[in-house]
Image (cartoon, rainbow, N blue to C red; front, side):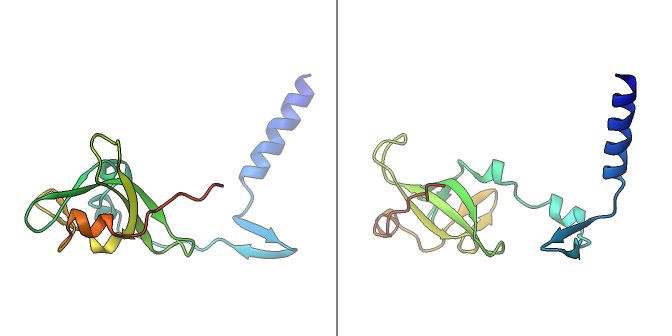
Length: 130
């Protein structure tokens, strides 16, 4: 039993110490890493804190609430899912917009030029069932 435990431990340690490459269809590929300015990243907005935030327009009227953030399949373009209309989650509808249309000003999330009616007129968003 001890021998099996020692062999398993050695195998796990060897696997963890292996170089970072992946075999994809028999061809080794190295993982590309990028250096980031971690201080700049740390001053950004966490999705967990943004979701649930009210969205206002230029006149400071609440026009919706952030329901979710979705990363596009290309991995680059984030989208924001807004809940518009309704009261306390009843009767609301979801719409989706490119995240870069939002602005943050004075701790508020602003969607310039938006109105509740204009957002309600957008096609309704439904999550894909995966």
